[in-house]
Each structure stands twice: as structure tokens, then as C-alpha cells.
Length: 513
Image (cartoon, one colour):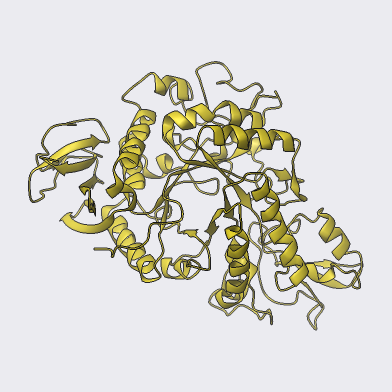
């Protein structure tokens, strides 16, 4: 059983919004801040505690906002800074926190900082980015490869006869956190948005901001793999994370979750701690097959590694970078069971907008592909009702996900058996029961194809069982238990019989509880 520890800096549920795909009110087919403000009551009704906005900054949109050209303004496609202020105020009136994407590793090549940096080797901002001389043969300084581009992570700048580093697109040059002035400027971004009322930040690929100052070649075993090898160095990143944490702790205080896109939870956990990140994503479940054994191993391993550093894990089943959970598991019932697991596991759940509707990836025709990383399917627009444009003012920028006439918010709100209502019910149960929020957790063996775990605190115990099969299975547990929630609604309020229906997840309490 996990040892008791201090509760996390944030113990609620975070709802990720990809603004372009949430709701368009202007008629241009791109979601906007006014559309998010218009749906805040949906989030209150659903029962989440915070909304996280993917980037809304001014940007040329080479990587849809992760190439920032101005950290202190809103891109006109989303609205204005005044619209952001209005959204923050309206959310706070509803007791919703607002979190914002923070992009610390790189900017747009159109950012004034980079325009100055590339203007001359003598420019005061030259060292704000990573510039290196060519290799002896005139090629890139080392063998690092960029994500998406399938090319070197270096671009030659003829005007100054040096290469600049970009671990993503050439339009996204890496900044140099080893430069004190650059670091202070990036901390100023946090101060700017905290002062406007932002409650938290999601830090994009924050583990990449600390690099080996020698910039050595990647070893053969990881050569050619973007963001691997020496692209990140924990001991070089830690001082920057401490500076970030100090900035976040100053009034008005804010929380941060880091995107640490590394495969091992033990690696991820090293970036979290009392003076480091409050929280860090670990994406193990996104990459796991829908099999009980995999989930059992992952949950146990993540729990051990995060407990070892006194940190709380996060759990995520979908986001703007990965295929939707409903598409990955392949069955509507399994997607419902996965939602119950996501919300009841010990840690902070992150819910991707649209997963509460059971949305699947959209099919993107070749002539509609726009993302350099091939992630358009999971970024399809949210359908809000059964009208021709499903509540959107304009024809959306990407095709709709499958069957939007059924999988839309209005239709599912009218159906108490829907995925939307299930999500609302399990969120309400988590909010009502402290054992499901901050209680200890023990993974137990029940059956090969069932994930089972206990959540316990002084208020009582809940037992969660998830059947990963599309057929009934026996899952005997000791004692008398009552079903307080079932992913398919079956048997709620009655005694648990020791048998799970196909794709069924249940939350149990003792029969006299």
C-alpha cells in the first residue's frame, strides 16, 4: 500500500481544451476564447475543477501555437487579451481555475528575441538561443535529430555562418536557459500571466530546457531519435526548475505540471519535488494496450516511483498529441470503463475535451491534413448539438469526428445513460469521497483480466474493479460490497455478486458503508 503523504498542490480534475477545436463563435471555423467562455457552464455541470488552455499566444502557427511570437498577447484567431481576461474572470466566478500552456524550450523564429539574435553574432540577444559553429566538414554541430522534420536539429544561418538548434521545426528555435537574461525573460512570462489571474501552467517539454553544455553527439543506440540522449540533462534542468518554482510560489501563487515526455516513470519522477515541479505528466497509460496486466504493472510501478520521491502522479488517457482513447481501445464500453479508471486512480486526472463524449479520432482526407506531426485526427472539433454545424458559427477547420449527430453534448446530456452522464457521475463521486481524491492506494490481485485497486483513508474504503474483456468474467473479492457506480449503470445500489459484465468497471463500498 502507498504510504500516506502530504496531499498534492492540486487535487482536482483538469480539463484540457484545445482552443482551435472547442467552439467557434466568430464564423471563421476556428475555436476562440469567446467560445470557451460560452461553455464554462458545461464544465461546471460536468464537475471539473480547472481548465487548461493549449497555447493562445500570437503565433505564425507553424506548430499551431507552440511556436510563440509574442508571449504577452493573444493571437487574433482566438480573440484579444481582453477576451482572455474576461474568460479568466468568468471562470473564477464559477470556481474554475484557468491553466495556460507555457512553452519554455523554444519560440517562433518570428519572435523579436530571435529576430535580434540572428541579426548579428554581436547582438545582445545572440546567446538567448543556441548557436554553434559548423562541424569541421561544414555540417551540423552534432548528430541530433529534430522531431517532426526527420532532419537534423540544426539549421544553418548563412548571414552569420552558424547553426541554430531546434528540437522541433526549424521555425521553433530553442532558447538558451543557461543565459541569465533569457531565463529572467521566460520567468517574466509566468509573472505576466499570473498577474492576469492564471492559476496554473502546463509546461511544454520542460525537461528539454537543461542541456549538456558540450552538446555531444548522441550515442549510437539513440542516434536519430528526436529528444533523446543528451537532448535533456536532469542535473542541468533542475536549477531552472527551482527558479520556475520560486517564481510560481510568489503571490499570486500558481501550480505547474510539466510535460516530461520520457518513457520511464522513474525518469519522470526525478523532475518533481518540493523545489521542482508540482506535478509531471507520465504518459504510460496512453501508450499501453487495453489489457489488465499492462495497466496493473503501470499503476504499481508509477505508484512506487512517485512515492519514492514524495510526489503525486498524474493520469492521462488522451491529449492533443495522441489518438483518442475511444479509438485506441476500440469499444464504447471499454472507453467508459477507462474513464472510471482514469478518475479513480490515485493522482491528478487530466481529461481531454471530448473524451467525456466518447469521441473517436476523425478521419482526415489527405487534402485536409494540416499538422506537421500527423495529429489532426485527435484535434477534430467538438460537436455541441445536432444542428448542421453542431453549434459552430462557421465550417470547422478540421472534419468532424465520427457520428457527431449522436456523439454531441446536447444529445448526450438528454440521455442519462450516456458517456457524458457517466463522466459527470464518476467526477461527482470523486469529489464527494476523500478516499478517491487523496486516499492511499493498493493494487490487488483478483483475476488475470481485471484491474483491481483499493482507495482508503479515515473516511472509508472504495474498491475499483475494471474488466478488460468484452465478455463476462468472475472477479471474487473478500467481504460484502455494494456497487455505488458502474460504467454501464448495471447493478448500482445493489450487492456485488463477484461477476463483472463485459467491459464493466465498478466502484464498490462495504455493504454497510
